[in-house]
Length: 320
Image 1 (cartoon, rainbow, N blue to C red):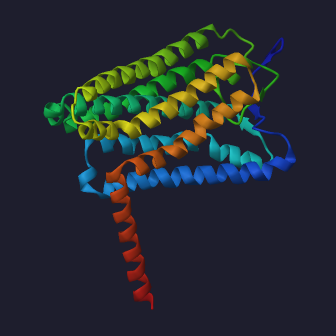
Image 2 (spheres, rainbow, N blue to C red; image 1 turned 90 degrees about the vertical axis):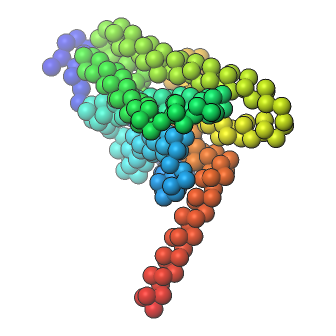
Image 3 (spheres, rainbow, N blue to C red; image 1 turned 60 degrees about the vertical axis):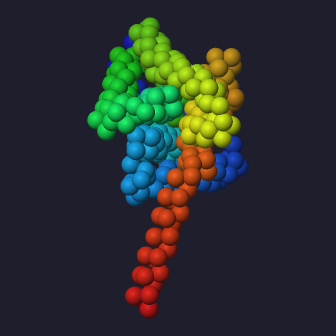
């Protein structure tokens, strides 16, 4: 059904990172490797935490959820991109596009909220150590995780449903490797004021407020650490939150780079590369940051590897 230059389209065309045929094998190999490293690294973090009773603490409960969210976040976009590169078919249905937007927004928001919850956990551990077990009790931790999931789903549902009211022009090309909300809205021929209001609301609620909470928590943490007189005590306190602070810097730094680059030069290759950093590089590096900077995680991974090797030797011995 058409009205002027508007139509109810059923498919979009994802232009991807590059249309040069000679680059496709390289891009496929690169992003497949990154995706496998991301999934394997985050799975190892989850297995290490779940298999070690000493790591059944609030901080590692939040970390395992963050690792799972990272796997889902990158799985929302990368497998589709790999299939498109391999098959040279860049079409995505309207329903598929909405589904991708829903999960992308949901897991992006979940990352934001979990990083905020982890900052609060570090704040309580360093600024109120004597009351830590009372404040961060199992019931509160479960509520924080469940609340993060529920809020992320509701916010994503709100943003996705507002797209259903739009009519789209006959131009259905999305200059991206996934259905980015901003790019989809540019193709709409109908009024997008409500969508823009919702997007601003989501940005403030899921970006500005969590980041403000993280910055406040760390301002209190640093103030508390600087009051610790021995240098050894200061170093120990800094090391407990160093991994989280590194992940926060990487996550918000790349995310902010996407919006700044898209605002400065719309549809530029710079914006596309910033999106790659945000959607693929950050989830891939998170497990390395936590495993390399965290002695407990390294110890648990080592024990997990030894158990796997002993089981393999036992299986080999039985077969022989």
